[in-house]
Length: 186
Image 1 (cartoon, rainbow, N blue to C red):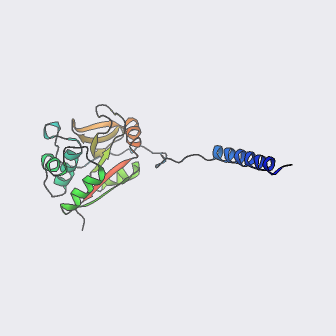
Image 2: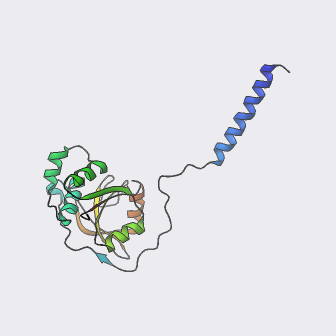
Image 3: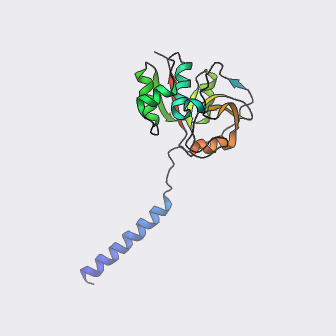
């Protein structure tokens, strides 16, 4: 057998092994959803301000609400003027909050972390990756509470409205369960 024939057979065998192994490996999502038990209790964080669409809402409005709640009054207009009217990234929002003396982090949260944050009276900013009526894909919302029916959120178009658990969790998952935590802890 010639060296070329042996090389062809070796390459075919290696290719077949590679194809077999590739079929055995499942790609991992950045966040794997886990089973979630809907809470039976109700919680609502009081005194979270609402800045609706008339104040430019969106990401800047959500950040202004949470910063004001944490004792650093801000307006969506001020944030938009400082950061520009472009689409604001979670990183840009966190950097702005840190510059104003608050602690900020953006991360991939899970539903139990969302519940714990509300229990600690710390509203979370979340981003939705799919439409969850009345919210649109890409909207930012401030989670201000929950009950057995769903999550209570503020967004550019709604103030303390309950969004049912299943559509909320699906829409949030499509954005990688993005959460932005802003606190005034030292």
